[in-house]
Amino acid sequence: MLDVTKCIIELTELPSEYISADMPSLSMAITHIPTAVYWTIRSIIACSSQMISRIGVGHDYVTSTTEAWELSSLAHKVRNIYEHLTKQLLLCHQHIGE
Image 1 (cartoon, helix red, strand yellow):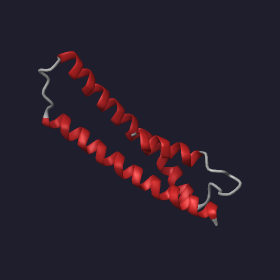
Image 2: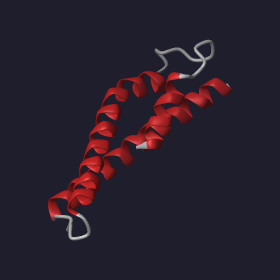
Image 3: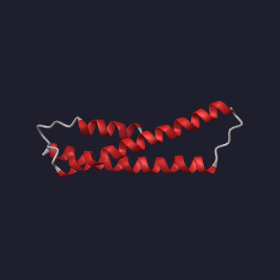
């Protein structure tokens, strides 16, 4: 989640004098930012909810299969989003380097 956030910040701070928003790799990344933000926030809420439940119940808390599956699913989704944004960011940096 933190890596996705850093990647989004990097994308938004690319120098506009070297790359324009209509450049395919940047425009594709920009269109995915709202989705990345949504899944990052949803993941934060799911993690927070589980941590609060553990604190409230104490050491007797047992993670249900559904909760474990949700966190695993969210982690997979956020990882895929990160990989996609990172790829687009790399293409943007290559364009700027040219």
